[in-house]
Image 1 (cartoon, one colour):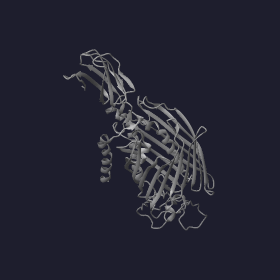
Image 2 (cartoon, helix red, strand yellow):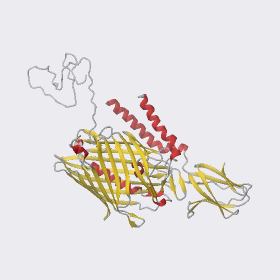
Image 3 (cartoon, chains in turn purple, red):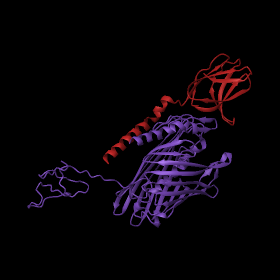
Image 4 (tube, chains in turn blue, green):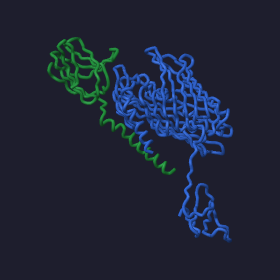
Length: 414
Length: 124
C-alpha cells in the first residue's frame, strides 16, 4: 500500500519536474484543425461500440497539464504560455424492445482547445485562445438474431471562441452520420448538409469472447481492418485521402500490433505495439512510432512514444494517441484522468475489451452459522420440515438468508 | 469489494474537486496577462511599443503612449505571456526590435542606451 502510494506521488511529480524543460509548442494550424479529428474520433468510437449494440457504455476523461509552459501555443508572434485542454464524455445505452431486439441511444461530447488559463467549465477566452466543442448523438436499432444494426444521428460542432491569431472559423457546423452493420462488417458515412464527408468500412474479424466468440484459438488471430475515405479541403483544393488502420492480435489477445497508413500520397502514419495484461483492457502499455510531417519545413521524422493506461489515469509521452488528438502536443508528459466501462449482459470490460474482467466474489462466513446451505428460508416462521399449509418461499439469487442459533429467525442477516 | 468501491469513489471525488478547482488554483500563481509599464531612460522620445510577428508582416500595438525622455508610460494590460518580438518606435532610429520573455503579471520595462549606443531592455 505504501509502495503504491509513493509510486503514485512519484508519477505525479515527474511531469511537474521535467515538463518545462521538454515542452514543445503546438501550432495555431493544428489547434484550428482539431475539430476535424475530434468529429472523426467520436464516430470511430461509436462504430466500435455499435459492434454489439446490446450493452451500455460510459466514458469520461480530461487531459491535465498543470503548467502553462507545458503545451505553449506557437503563433506568428511567438510562443504563448497557456494550456491545451480536452474534456470528453460518452454514453451509450441499450433498451430491449423485444426478444433479441434492442434500441440504442448514444451521446458523445468533447470540448477542447487552447486558452491562457486552464479551466474545467468556464474558460477565460483570452485574445489567443480557441475553445470548441463537438456533440454527437444518435439512435440505433440492433437485431441480435439476424446480426445487424442500424444507427444514425447528428453531429454538432460549436466554436465558442476564436482568438485573434486563428483563421476565421464557421461557428456552427452541423453534420449527419449513419452506421450500418451486418455481422462483423460495418459501414459508416458522414455528411455536411448534402456534402459527403467520410466513408468508413470496418472489418472486425477477430473473435471476441464478449460477443459470444472464442477467447482463444486461430479465429482470435483474424485481423481488424478499417479503411476511411476522408473528403476535405485544404487551402481551397480537394485533399481526399484514405486512411487504413490494421489491428492485429499477436499473442493471446494481450499483445497487439497496430499500423496506420495513408493512401495515396502520405504513406506510413503510425504503428503501435500494445500490451494488455488482461484482455478486458483496463490496463494497457503502449509503444508507438508516429511519422511527423512538418510541411512548412518540408521534412518528416519518426517520433517514438509510449503510454501507460490504468483505470482513472493515463500517462503518455510522445504517444501517437495524444499527438493525434491533442493538437500534436509532444515533448512533455500528458496526463489524462479518465474512466470508461462497457457492460454487456453480466460482463464488464473496458473500451474495446476482448474478454470480461473476472470479478472476485468474497463470501463472508459468520460465527455460529449452521454449516449447511440455506438458500431457501420459509417466510412463515414455521420450523423446517413441519407439516401444514404450504409455506410461501422466495428464491432470490444473490440474497442469502442466514440462520442464527436454534430458533428459526427469519430476519435475514440478524 | 465494497471497500474498494468506496476507495474508488473517494479518489473520484478528490479528482472531481481538483478538476473543478484546477483553473482557479492556477490563477493564484500563474498570470495569464501582462500589465506592462515602460520607463524611458534614453534621451530620445518613444512614441509607441508594439508586438510584431516573426515574419514582420503583422503587428499589434501595446503601449499607446508617447514617452518623453525620463518619463514612464501608463500601464497597459494585454494577453501577451510568452516570448515575443517587441518593436520600439522612437526618434533614436527608425525602429528597434528585441525578443523579450514576458512572464505575465505586473512587469516594469526600462529602456536605456549603453555606452556603445545600443538599446538596452531590462525588466525591473
